[in-house]
Image (cartoon, rainbow, N blue to C red):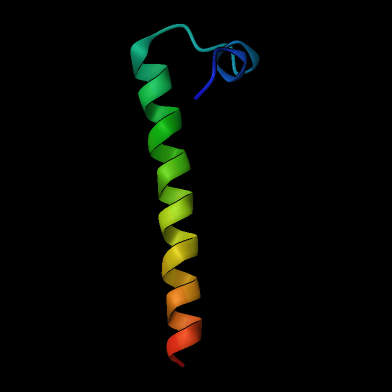
Length: 41
């Protein structure tokens, strides 16, 4: 996560950054799992 992203999303604390990273990783993992399921079927 870049300083620009932190400013754009108006993040003020470490918790804000951690939450944004967690959401980002969750979306990425979800997409990976869905792609894996599609390729397995």
